[in-house]
Image (cartoon, rainbow, N blue to C red; front, top):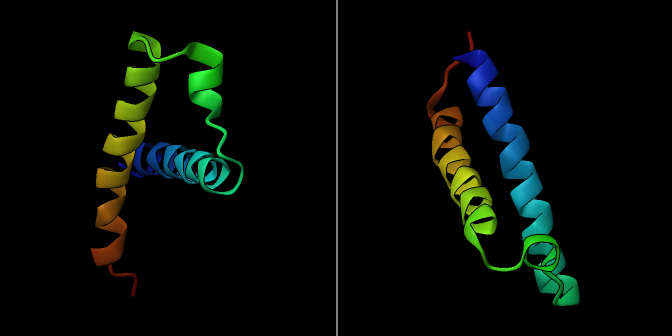
Length: 63
């Protein structure tokens, strides 16, 4: 599960950078590169799932 969570964290960070670009520059690189087609929808879905997976990080306890 640790590998999955690290992949999810990387996708979440990429998603955060993209939202930052949208907020600061009104530029969405995903839409620019892929348009709003099935590939873009898959990318958005994967980033959303990654965010949900990373919710577990909030409740993980390290002793």
